[in-house]
Length: 243
Image (cartoon, one colour):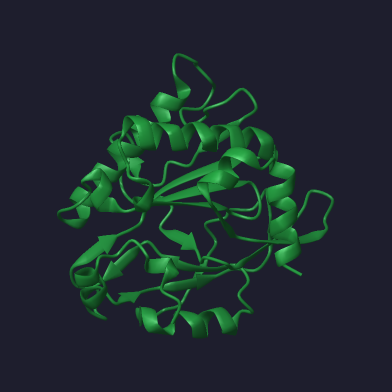
């Protein structure tokens, strides 16, 4: 089993939390709901993850953010803490600028150690940060974890917005880059609005606006790559790895 998808678990947590759900969807266009993930009906052991990849040719495959201690879903944790940065117009340069700003915010303002985070290009519209929940003091009951996660993500979003007043509350740049509000808020209710995460090193396949089917791989970036590489080079690398 590849453990990279569960890198954020401590040794004791890895021995305890072993059950989650897997999902998959067909290639979709940008005007379709990305929440249309088809979930396996059963809660399965994380040891079955590689079989799930193989079943769908490692394409558009997901796991739930919730991981349970038993197959009946008892005692749940969520993770990693996820910052999902997207640009609907596929302006990856702008999304990359926001991602760089987010890294400096996480490291310099929130004091997240670089060993407690990982950075990914999703293969399509943006970038993800995965962060150990412990690094942000996210713990407690499942409701406490979601509420704390929502509060931290709101803090990050507001810091990126600064004094600007864009049309939507999660927009963080003039070019329309947004931070997906995964954990809800006090107005809409604290809940996992985005309850899944795309598997590491998997293929992201979608239907473009010109109705072509395109594929890129979700790839991890080093901090050096994040700060130096242009978005065109990152995208090109993800496209080549998908061939």
